[in-house]
Structures are given as structure tokens and as C-alpha cells.
View 1 (cartoon, chains in turn blue, cyan):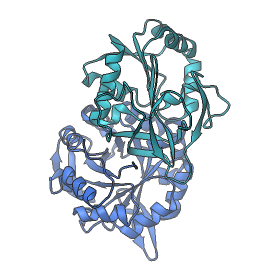
View 2: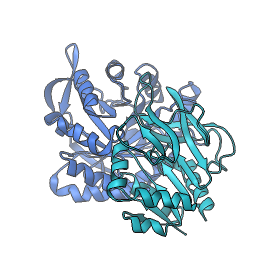
View 3: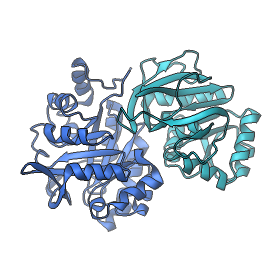
View 4: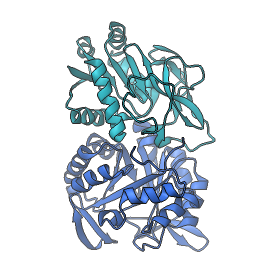
Length: 254
Length: 202
């Protein structure tokens, strides 16, 4: 009887449709978010993340409608983010049906945003997304979809985020993202050891063994991936059975 | 029968509404004391900070009508903070009084484990739960909290969960039911639990 490791599909959207592509280049359509959400809900996903990677102001109403349509399909938790800059942005996302709010670039620019979200929604609803890139003997925080360097140390920033009220860290390795070479284990392990809250590992997943590694050696509490689930390269049920067979606690439907 | 959802501004009211809709149950939101007077079944959803819930109940004048409804025997389900609110007080906001339906104080889970306790966990069953009828004993439920009721010697606890320490997960006493996890986010077992509550309330 222990807490299960979570498997979390991520829907990157342009507001309305799920898209795939690296660094906003060569984006291609990967389907209707509500249809994918219904599939993952049925296949045993433990949670779902929906991100608005365009995050433009004029597309906001479209993204909120997407959250509503996705939430309608789910009997599991939903985190949503992308372009959340203010408490009002977050309120709109929660009202649309998100259980958690994911913040990234705006929190780096104004860390008090984390405290404001904590004050209104509680730590369990505040996910700090940290995009980290290897830089010499440390990891640097990147923003704007992994494009801009900030000079911030990823471990120090994760710690600060938790002290301000973040209840979870969504950690993406910018180096591994899109490579399908597996999660960045040293990075995940360094962050998981540095903070007292759960860590969701992201970036680089392809094989079931990658997930086993990040839970076993990386100390991750959850693991997130996108295209390998969308394309059914890796069915969630099969992935969980693989992990269970290796004595990694996961939630299998009874 | 129509289920009344106490709406004090909590984030998960909409989720509970959606879950009830899927079960074909009608629900309405109650934001004023008058709405509670005629309630046939009550759900108090909650997530976030103890103080936010207690303050909102008091500011909206909902405390007294809620307690009256509980005394009248109206079937009640508290979710997450909606369970914690039933106790005397919480270490999360020691200056405030809970609803004092059950004696005791809500305490932080130990710092030896990752907090919040977030994700899917299993229950340790004491047996005889009405809410858990027809649900496999090894079923997982979704939790998202840092505070809890210590299981030690708590009356009316029908299931506990373990995260750093053992805490109350399911509480049942006459018409009063409460769960520390989120049935509205707990897949099929969660839907079964809500459906069991609706049957009890019918």
C-alpha cells in the first residue's frame, strides 16, 4: 500500500488542436484534445496535462473552451497551463475545469505569482514547470518554450518555487526533449533530492525501460510524455504492466 | 432527488458536478443559507486551505444551516477539506473553529515523505463501509492534501490510508459521510462511491 507512480500524457495545443513539433517548428496536427483525453481516461492515464504552447492573448477563449471540453471527458485530475501570467488567468483556467495550474515563464519573471496561486488555490493546485538545460556543471532554467536562457540555477529555482508554495515540479530536460533517448536521470535525481514535493519527469521518453529508470534511479513520482502516447507507440496499459512486473508501484485497473 | 453542492468558491465544485452528471444525478449549487433549508442531499466539496473553507462558510452564513441540515439527518458527503471541516480545528489554521461535528484536530502529515500527498493510493479497510460497497479492496483513489486526521483511535473511520502516517480516508456516521480523497477524480471506483452515496441518499 504505497503511492503509485503516475503516468501522465501531455497534450500540447495551439489553443484548439493538439500539435506536435520541436520548438514551434514544423508543427503538425495530432488530433482533437477531447478525443485524446477520452482515450487516455479510458486507457488508465493517472492524470492529464494540457498546455497552450501558443499562449497568445487572443487565443485565450479558445484554450479555455478546450479545457472545458477536455475536463468533460475526464474522471482523473487535469493540469493546465501555458501563458498564465496573473491570478485572473489562473482563475479562468480553474473555472474551466482544471484541478491544477502550471506556470513557467511568468513565474520566472515574477516569482510572487507562485505565492498568489498558492494563497488562492493551495499547494496541491500549483505546478511549477521548470525547463532545464545542461550548462557546464549545472542545469540552467530556460523559458519561452526552452528557447531563452535565464542564468538561473535549476535546483535553486525549484527550491525557491517550493518555498513560495508550488506543490509539484514538472521538470523538463530541454536537452532530452524530443530525442526519445530516455529521461535525464541525473537532472531528475538532483531535483527530486532537492525538493520536498513530488516531481514529474519529462523529456526524452520512448521505451518502457525509460520510465522504469526514471522511477527507480531518478526518484521521479510521475512521468510525462506526449507523442509516444498520441501515436500509440506506447500504450499506457502495456507500459503500466511492464512497470508492475518490475515491482514499480503503478495503478492498474482492478 | 436533487443533490445540493455547497459552493463556497472551491476549485472542485465543477468537477463534482460533472461526475454527478455522468451518473445521471441532478445537482444544484447552494451559495446562500436559504438554499440549504430544503436540501435533500448535501455534498461539501473542498480543496486547498482549511481557512478558505471555514471563512467562506462563516462569511456566507452557511455554518448554522449546514449544521441544522446534518442534525435533521440530511445525507451528507464531505470531500477532502469537506472531511477536515467536520472536526474541531486544524493545524493549518489553528485560530479557526471547524464545524465540530467530530472531536479532534487536523494535523500535518509527517515531513518524512513528499508533501502534498498527491496521486493514487490504496485504502486499508476496516470493513462495513456503505460508501465502498462493490468496490474492489485494492482499488486506488486520488488524493491531494498535506493535512489529515490521524487514524489513531478515531471513531467512525471505515478506511484509512498510509502516507508517512496512517490517516482517516473514509468516515461514516449515520447520515454523515466523508472521504479524504477525491471520488470525482478517482476514475471508476470514485464513480462507484458517488453512486453508492446517491443510493444511500435516495
